[in-house]
Amino acid sequence: MRYVKGSIAINERFDLPLLLHVRDARYISQRQLIALLQYGDTDLARKRLAWRVDRLVQAGYLGTLEQRVFGQKIHSIARKGLQYLEARGHQLISVTSAMETFLDPIKMMHSLELVQIRLIFQRSGVLHSWKSDIEVSSENMETGDEYAKDYDAVAILRANEKLLRYGIEYERTTKALVRYRELHGLLANERKLDGVLYFVRGAERLFTVAGHLEGALPGLLFCAADSFELRGVNALFLRSLTQPSSSLRDALGLHVAVGGDAQESLFFSIPVN
Image 1 (cartoon, rainbow, N blue to C red):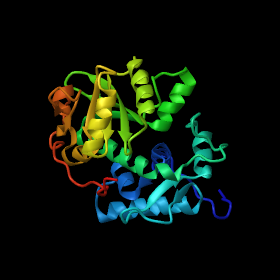
Image 2: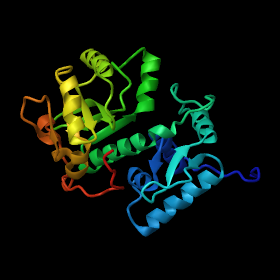
Image 3: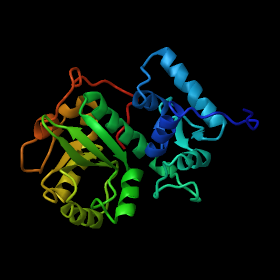
């Protein structure tokens, strides 16, 4: 078979999952890709992934930011990559190749930190499945609001004897008071989830957000993202400012894998803004 000059043959076993992970994350670091694809953290694994990513970038399926973040390459899906995924039946309503723009650089750090939260759950062994924000948004558009809002993600977590479905929200900056009032009303109408895990960057901001949203939903829990990065599911979560905190592991009865308690710096340290 002959190929057009500059084209590549897409390997559906290895390239397809890679393209899906990059699209769903919006922005993702090379080391995060290694962890999600379970390549193994060795020199050989890093070289294998680097070769696969580089060929997809050169062929126009992926894009790479010119500037590295904390020394790491950051990748995003390109229009050609979206077209390929759509042709293979992996289209989303919320992000399509026909859109004039489908990426927002302002959301880059937000996207990277959400992937980090996902990987901490994955390493703990409690993560059954994960839907990114664009998947949640697409599902809401298809079903007429399956969920009360377009969450940053929806995670299914393994508890001792059952699976729990939780919305994931991540907040880097404080919103206006009127927006928190709107969010309180939206969360109060949630009927499809067991609860929502609200990760907030910075302890002071955590108490501000919890004060505005507590009581909106019985399963609403708040956690400092900094603590979660250090302690994983053993990090302390709040239900309200007046109730004692407990670890997520204890609060939800999560089934943690052997060795899943140990946390280490997976990708990069993110400064508090």
